[in-house]
Length: 208
Image (cartoon, rainbow, N blue to C red; front, top):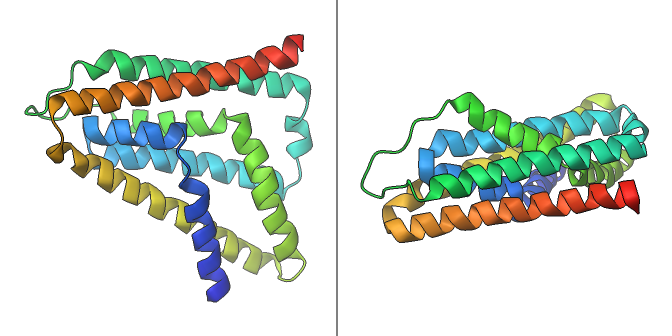
């Protein structure tokens, strides 16, 4: 049980650093409420699961090809720039006293999924983190236990997403209109910043 809890803690630790997903969750939680914010995180977790399977089945070498690296950096750049610009353009439309906007839940899920699946850093992240965890676990435990302990990482990720969604969706009631607009605008700038970084990495591979 202590090992299982340690893997849950690992999942929490992996999700905690502020990045595009957390920035998007804060923005969605304030604008649309708990479910939209949570589904951003769920979409990202599903993408994490895809990469965990990629690492598990050892096909990560295919993703290390320069063409694939360039494609993923460029796709990630597009997704983040689009999301960031959309966030900034809609920031001034927020009203503290009005009802939250309506948006299809599936859009939030897909936004989180594509932000994570198109992030080459996610590949390297899971290759380094989960690859080392897998190597250590496989040396000691059988396949069923590997799956069991891998699920603990997912539980940690989902706990963090649930917490972020709860905080961001309830935070709205304590904010003024100007602060909400400021937070949403800052989230947009953050996402655009990550997008520019991704674009620079693609440029470096193509012309470096």
